[in-house]
Image 1 (cartoon, each protein chain N blue to C red):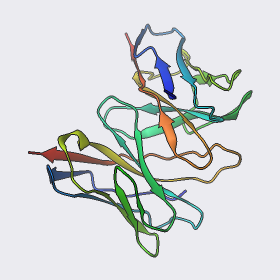
Image 2: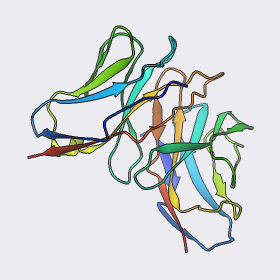
Image 3: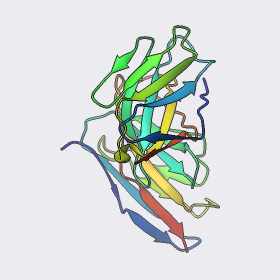
Image 4: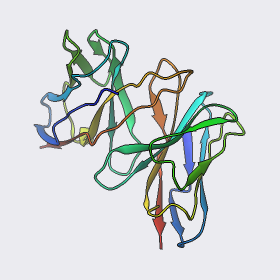
Length: 113
Length: 111
């Protein structure tokens, strides 16, 4: 299974863009990159996912390098409510509909005034 | 609204007792999962189920048991064989194309 490497923590000023990096140098061709975030004592929340193209939704943008060995999650205008632990996850292919996700320790993003 | 309901939110157990954590979903998802989270740590997979009456062990299944008698329900039993059961337990479900939907978790404390 491809593993991911993320910085332990990051700070971002409110209103600025938060750029969260993730390395997944052993990713295989059919594995997706998923991003989730977890606010303290809550269940993780899905943010975005992608295979090889850049993706954007109402929450964030995902930039995946051409070699797919790394990606960046961008929160364009961070707010205090974006303070959370952000997990970069590579989806493990599996038979049927179950697809196990392997969670690391993530990046703790602190948004400050 | 569709989602996953975990109950109870907080649970206290005496040493040596079995305890069952509830997880119900109305998303019509086939796959369901149980994860455990310890303070400052990531999530570790306990069990998962692809379909009714079928389930597989995850990375840390020892001391836990599950059942999947209905598509909507995937209860987790923490048995007395689990040596360190105090943790935050998260249930999730998924479809093939989209990501996981998580419940709000159950915090289990052994007293």
